[in-house]
Length: 269
Image (spheres, rainbow, N blue to C red):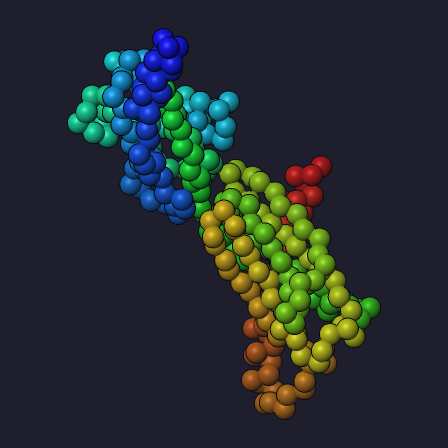
C-alpha cells in the first residue's frame, strides 16, 4: 500500500514539470545583425534541484547550463557568444531559460535540445536550426570536346551549409562526378558530366540545379545546347560583336572553373 502511495506521489511530481514550447527559427539567413533567441518555456510545480541545459547535436555536446540561483554558463561552441544577462521572463525560476546569441554565425547550425530537470522530473525538446549563406557565385559551362562529346560543368562557391548540384539534360539527370570542399567556413561545390553529342536531340535544354536541403533553398542555371549550331546570316560587325561578347563571358566562366578545380586539387594534396 505504501509503495503504491509513494508511486502516485512520484508520478504527480513527474507530471508537474513540462516544457510548453521551444521557439527556434528553423532557417535564418546569415547577415542579420539582430540578436538571435532560442527560447525554452516550461512550467513546474516543484523547483527543487532545478537545472536548465541546452545541447547541440546530441547530449554529449553541452553548450549552456543554468542552475539557479547561480549565474548561467555558456560552454563549447557557444562560449563567449551569448548575452548571459538576458532574462526571458519576470519569473526568477525561468529567468535564464533562453539562449540569447549576440551574433549568429553559420557554424552554429545544428539540432538544439532543451532539457529541464528537477530532482523528481525531467522533460526535453529538440528543434533544428540552419543559418544559411547563399552562393557568392554560380556558373554553368557547356564545353564542346573535339571527340564529339559535350562536357557540362557546374560550380558554386561561398555557401553554407553544403549544397547539392545536379546536371539535367532534357529533363533527365546525367551521371556526374562531384566534389564539395570546405574552406574558411564556406563550401565550394563542383560537378561535371560528359555526354555524347550524338545521343542528344538537335536542341536540348541543359540545366544545373543547386539545392541546400537544410535551408529549403533552390537555384538554377540553364541554357539551350544546339548539337549543330545554326549559321545565322547577320551583318559581320553585329556577328563579331556578339561573338566577342559571348566568348568573353565563356572565358570568364572557364577561368573561374579552372580556379575551382586547381583549388580542389590543392586541398586534396
